[in-house]
Image (tube, rainbow, N blue to C red; front, top):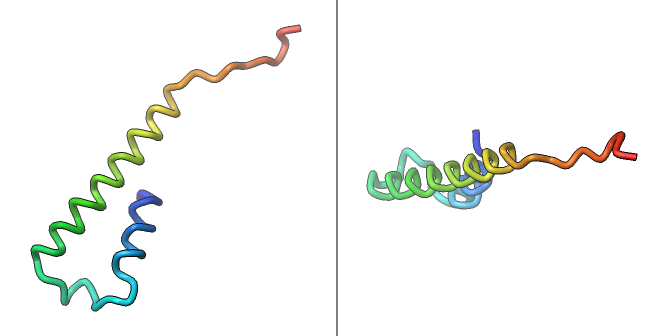
Length: 60
């Protein structure tokens, strides 16, 4: 579900053989990279969600 991971997957797999033809070690490495990207994006989103916003409406 990670947009960054989807973009990374498209970049890595374009102009290459289908994933079912990749060696298992390469698939494991790709999975680890995509997982790290997804985890990083989720952590960033959680941090942004937890950051309080300043509401300036009605402060006059």
